[in-house]
Structure formats: C-alpha cells, structure tokens
Image 1 (cartoon, rainbow, N blue to C red):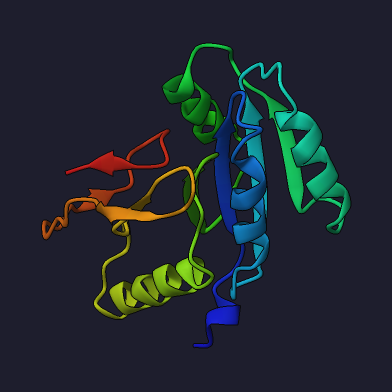
Image 2: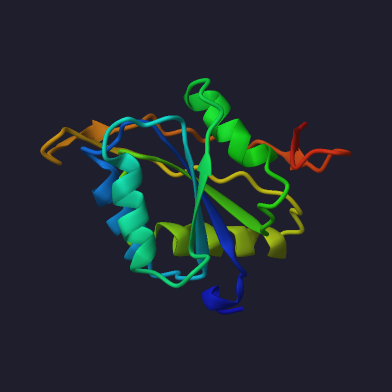
Length: 165
C-alpha cells in the first residue's frame, strides 16, 4: 500500500498565546510529505496574535483543511481532551502537536508506514510516539528526549476511542 492510500490524518493542536512559535509549527505541518491531513486547532483563549496567525494560515489552504475551535479555557490538558472528545473529529489516524513544535517533513509519512507494518502484524490499534529533538528559542539543538523501548497495547473500549490494556 502506498503511503498516500492511508486516509486522512487528523492533526490535533492545542494553542494558547503561542504567537512567538506557532508560525514555524504551521509551516512544518504544511511541508509534510504526507498531505492527506486536516488540522484541528483548539485555542484556549489566546489574547496575543495566535488566532490571527492561524486564520491567515487557514486562508492559504483549501476550505476545511484547518478548523479552529474555541477551547474550554481550562489549561493545556483539558484543551487536548476537548479535541479528543469532539465527535465531529473522526479519522483513522490522529497526530498530536504542540504550538511550539517543529515537525520533520516526513513525520506523518514515517508514522503511517509504522502503522501499516503494525496492521500487517495483525495489531488492530497502535499508539505511536516519536523521539523528540529538543531545541532552544534560536532552533539550536539541545539534545533528545528519552528513548523508550516499551510497547503498549491498546484496545477499543465501548463508548471511547481508546483504552489501555
């Protein structure tokens, strides 16, 4: 199966006063080698230019490619949960990103290839996490996040998207 055949990836982005970094993250999403994605942004009440930057980005893309939602105004964890609980966001794949991330251009493509390998191994559910290269505010490398070698199995549970086992 070609990577282009995997279906839509719903990218979930929580924002709050991220004007200093959000443009680089949006540019890195736009530059993905896998282009079948839709971005869902939950803004938690930004009072800076964050929403203005996101709206400008959305105008440069086809309608429906970027969806901006009002967050719950309860902090970053509740902001992401707000996106996960939104029943109108349905997709075979979900990708989480922070407003200050900068994705490698093949991030989604690599994740989808791993997911395809898991399907061939008869794993029906998969939680994929990539290792993070840490950078400073000038984008200079600081090192890497811890490397985990543990496999976590996930199963579907009634009335939820995912459940740990």
